[in-house]
Length: 208
Image (cartoon, rainbow, N blue to C red):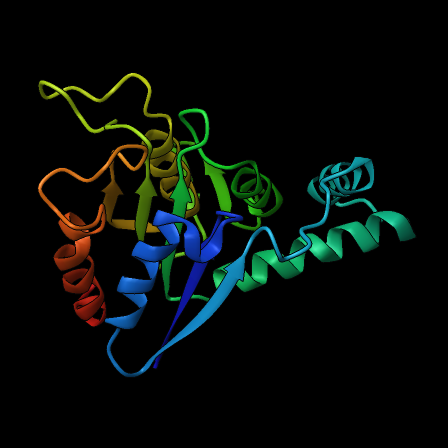
C-alpha cells in the first residue's frame, strides 16, 4: 500500500483544466494506492502570521513558545506531517499571472521550514520529505520551451522544480495542458494531447 497526496490548487475544481487532467491521472491509478485529497481553496489554510513567524525562529533557537505561538506552530506541524506522510504527490496548478495560484504559494510557505522539510548542510540542502511527484499545469497560452529555451513567462515550472528539490521530493514528470483560452487545435478537447501520458504515468506509479 502507498499513499498519494493530491494537491489541488484551483478554486474552479471540476471546471479547471488542471483538475480535469488530475482526474484522468487519479482514475488510472493502480489498486493499492490510497489518495488523500487536499483542496487548497477549501482547506482553511492558516495564516503564517506574527505568532507563527515568532514560533519558527524560537524553535530554531531552542526557545520556549508562548500559548499563541504554540497554537500557531501546531497548525504548521500538522500540515508538515500530512505532507511528509505521503509516498507520492500529484500537484495540479493552473497558471495565474505566469506563476502559481496564491493558495499553493501559501501552502508551500506554511510547510517549508528548516528542520521540518529540509536541513541546510555545508554542501547544500538536504530534503526531508522523500517520495516522488507528478505536476500538472494548465495554461491559457503556450508557455512551453521554444527553440530549446524555457519560455521567459513560465514561472510555474522553475519554481516548483526548485521547491520540490529543496524538500527532497523527486520530480517524476511535468504535464502541461496548454492554450486553454483558445479552441483546441486538431482535437476535441485540450486534454486529448495529455490523456495518454497521464494514464501512463499513473499506471507506472508503483515503479517510480
